[in-house]
Image (tube, rainbow over all chains, first blue to last red; front, side, top):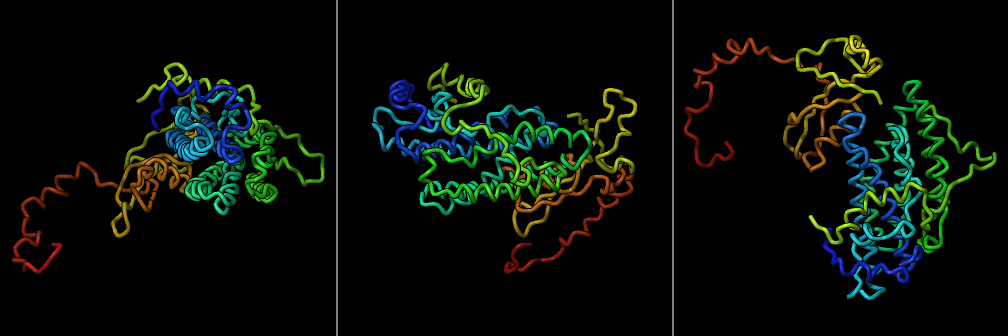
Length: 281
Length: 127
């Protein structure tokens, strides 16, 4: 990652300049940060499996996914930094991919809540990855055709990775759901723990209004795919037929209102740069 | 998750260790009660179009689909390949090291089996 000069940090990150919402750079910057943060936080969570995976090969698989997500996050952070720098005094306060990842506060992060949930067991990690990857696939499909050329390019590059994440995670959902009594039970429990955090993906906030994303289409495609896989995995699809009372969905991540887990993740992630500003390899 | 790995080597993989539901391996170890053994697979990678698949190593997986994906994650993440083969290790039959003398030593003094006694024209390339 790029170097950044520690003397810039305090100046750039004065509360008055970047509050939780919106950052300098307006809606596109906020939306790009939302994409970057979501990838980064899930990458950080998946990386917690490093050396703790259920089996060596799957340890490598989940950390590979983590690295894919970090790569995508970097692309988004670089673009966000570029937009922010264009709209602010870039000579004294340059934003960089590093400053955006390491030096923003909890309220400034715009990641989906589902990404910050604890890993739980393998079933929960797999299910979260599945929910997220299916959403991400639909999102990137739309971004590829979107009006923002840079976001379209990042989406086009990333969707190949996401295609694999969808394949890998859906096969695991099938394997565990339609596996032993215990694996099925654990998947069902993971569904209960995770489902209430899926709705946020499809509830646009202010900075998503001008993105041109069709959230209804995104939701329809997501539900169709998720329902197919869950039913094939002999799991109970929690969305039901659509006629009963809707399940309450947690929101807030997109606008910086996080679960109690978020502070701990950032403490882990940002400790080094906070303690030794500008520390480098 | 309670998974234990039982390592097999070529030629000594018993027939009953066929799949992911093998609990026999753990019968004598109460700590491993109910643990699952995933079979071993050999991985072959084609590094680019036109070349042969070459043996790259081995890994554990519950089935062929998982073995291919594990191979992709373990062996091709640094652009090592464009195609993968996997085969369950128990299907590979190896020559016995005890036979080495009768198998391979007799070839040592048969240099005439190499086509090395011809004069190649300069025009012939790639020989």
